Amino acid sequence: MKSCLILLALLLLASAQCPGRAIPNSDKSKCLHLFVTKTDFLLADQMCRLIGGHLVSISNVEDNDIIQFREQLPRYTGRETAWTGGNNLLDYDSWTWTDGQPFNYTSEGSELTTAVPGFNCLVISAMGLWFQAECFRNESFLCATDSSMYDHIDSSLL
Image (cartoon, rainbow, N blue to C red; front, side, top):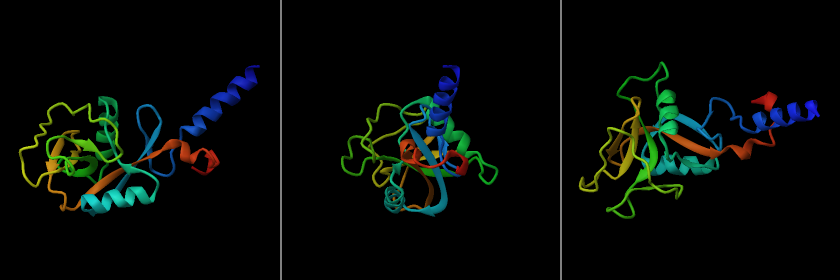
């Protein structure tokens, strides 16, 4: 019985792993991938879709903190930013995420408005703050994929 419980725990841990340098979100349901290649918002979103995901949506302070930590890699400065999936391109009066998740959390200290024409896409800074940006600006970007898509991969290969 004890060995069955240990095996079950190992299987659960293996299924929560993310490939390469990707890191899990707070509930381990997503793998977060940082792409340092700088591109505009729409191309970043397309690239995330090509790997089976979306630009990252941030629904709680824990995920914001994980992403903030990810952004503070040695090659980044405190002013470096990356695209998230936040935007108000389809409806200038409300913010949405590209993956359709509800926009019900905003990072403390961030002020989002719908009154800034042309600044319709959302970046996160290395300090965890969110800023509105022009969507054609070139930025690094964060993709989120379902962690379950890696379940079939041998965890020793990750």
